[in-house]
Image 1 (cartoon, rainbow, N blue to C red):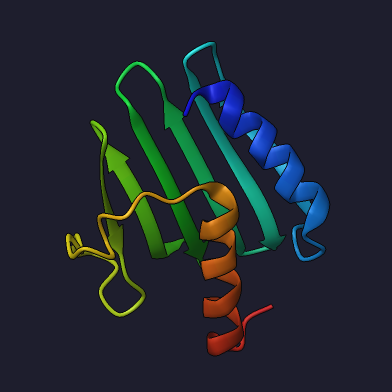
Image 2: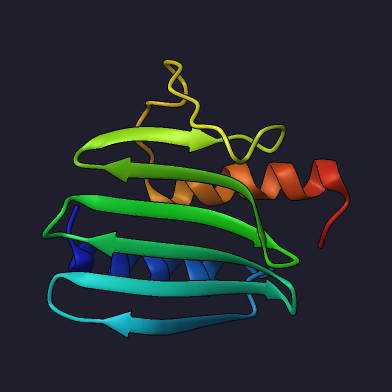
Length: 117
């Protein structure tokens, strides 16, 4: 999935999910994209894509700390669970590729379980 694909998905999801207050494009080139989907002042999803290195990072950040993530490095996926965000979960579920909509569905479930906006 290319930078152009991710950018389209970001605009679509930002426009269709009422809890996303703003989409910021922090950095962009032909092969790289770094964005934030803001939920509240200290809660956001950061999305990074680098086509050149086949890297994707989808990260839920709260209070300046990663609380959940799914990363693709060189075509291989892993995740960082809410119970152990510093550890790479390489289980079958952790290695499963996800698209932005699915990641945001996971985020919604986690935020509801944590009582966050």
